[in-house]
Image 1 (cartoon, helix red, strand yellow):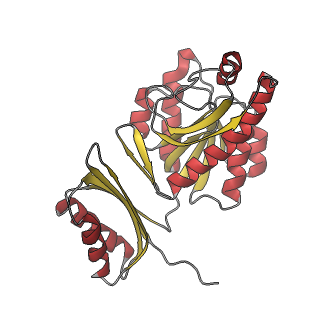
Image 2 (tube, rainbow, N blue to C red):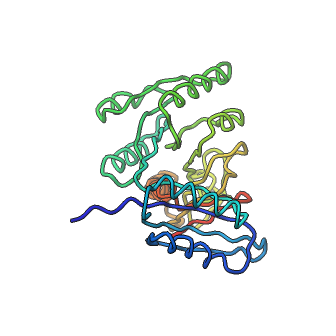
Image 3 (cartoon, rainbow, N blue to C red):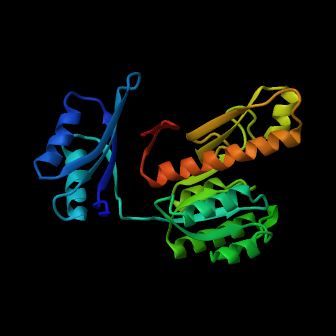
Length: 285
């Protein structure tokens, strides 16, 4: 089986105008390159055009990507981000004590499901240190309390910068990241929340759902922002429950959802399929 050629992935958005799809495809065609995948969306209310295009370059991938970026920015007046399919960014996993997403995420990385490299684990507890060592992943235990939160986050930032991390995934990390941390880390942070947001934000959502008597519970993966549980939503799913289900039943069913929703969000992000705007996302198939 032949290996898939290196491709360039571009995500672009900006004010809609006639002929954008044609101009983008023509630019690629006239350089002898070949489009592998293309998809687009228009927000009618905001008059914003979004596109994801992936193609095999005819020449040097980095130069062709840089030339395309200049074309999109200067001639089309649009915002753009670019990635090469061969680039596998380093990812840091944050976790506390709850381990279902922790194990599931690590095993998916090891199975090659994600286009990234799991570089390190950071935790405010040492409960999962032995497991991390068995997986052979560097584990950093950094206790976080009210009185040392600022210094703990400083140490986290130092570790992340040293490791070269480009994305953080929060596998039930039971700490609120400060606005300062999110600004200074300067990379996407993906969180898994154990409810179908915006319902039951905050703590103990399964207990809240049980008390309310809902018939559906869910899980939500979103980008973390300074406002708790209100960042742009990447992926969600639900499962049915009924009056016979206890809180323990909700937790058990919910954890299955959390693992799959979290995994899909990580996959979509690392495959460069997500555009964020106005606290919403456009997620390309």
